Length: 97
Figure (cartoon, rainbow, N blue to C red):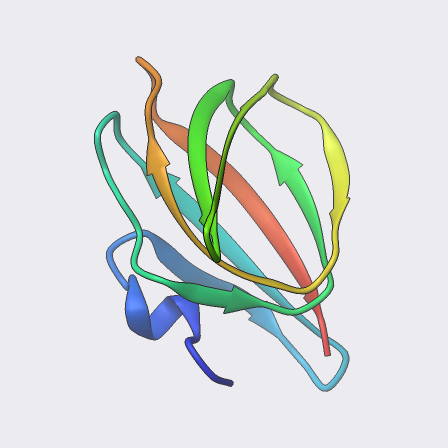
């Protein structure tokens, strides 16, 4: 995988499960932490904490805020992120292969 988050940001991403169809990643960070540019394929994201982040996708910057215990679909994308909130981020990503 190009720009695999477990390689670009191993301090934040941990592989929890993987088979021929999916890979499950756990992500944790703290306020002020930033990720390097990385890629996710089509992914189901499950939030386990409230968080606020700034994502940089190409030339665009967007700020997002999510509550805990929400599931959402993310189309394939390459981005970098920054925790701009006051709490840590805890998320599970179910990446489709």
